Amino acid sequence: MNNFQIKERKDLAPSIVLMDVYSPRLANVALPGQFLIVVADEKGERVPLTICDYNREEGIVTIVIQAIGASTKKICGFKEGDCFRDVVGPLGNPSELVEKTDEELSSMNIMFIAGGLGAAPVYPQVRYLAERGIKAHVIIGAKTKGLVIMEKEFRKLTPNVHIATDDGSYGFHGLVTDLLKSLVAEGNKFDLVVAIGPMIMMKFAALTTKALGIRTIVSLNSLMVDGTGMCGACRVSVGGKTRFACVEGPEFDGHEVDFDQALRRGGMYRTLEQRCNEEHDHKCNIGGTGNGK
Image (cartoon, rainbow, N blue to C red; front, side):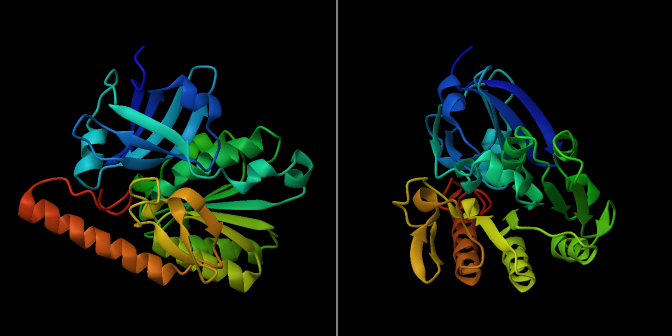
């Protein structure tokens, strides 16, 4: 099998694709929370994608891509047997959970909130805990039932899976923050919340957990573009200090992130790429996953 060959491809939802990519070296060292840079072909852009899973025995890393802009649409168009031009990584710092002892982890009650595509980077962290006998809680949020992804995979790891849909078509009718407050009101106590998903969701998740007094980690992977920090697109204020999600994250204390600044930056890049595509009909090097790339 060729390196970076797609061993398996699966449609998870409209415009959302899961791919198992053959890369023994990456699979051997990947950890939860890290990401990869994927280049589709010789003319392709660098697209940062968080690691959804890895199989060290089979040499497989799993990625999940949403077709939004020109680059991600091209990647989603690849079939089983196709090969990427290059896959670089793993990059970024792993989840802080891998730094804790099994005894420390077993003493914690952890809630993961996965909004939309955020289910992909949440999954390896929940699996990491499950392999140590720890059954975390998971809230999967989506606009509607058809956009809920990876539910079956999560249920194989923990019985504590909760679904929230904005339109009430499946599971809890409402936002993930409302479901979290409901679970806490029922007597559940959480020592840590890990929230990954759309920036606006993470902002309100952090506001909710701050009011509840629950420490919270968020992932700023949606700000990343080149994966090295050199482009500056992932620059964000955390605790009043400038940080770079690519090299210092992607995970940070959610109560210290300036989400309003991050949202403005993401909106700026979306506008720029849209103008590039509409006026020049080419792939703009600005955007990052989740921002139109």
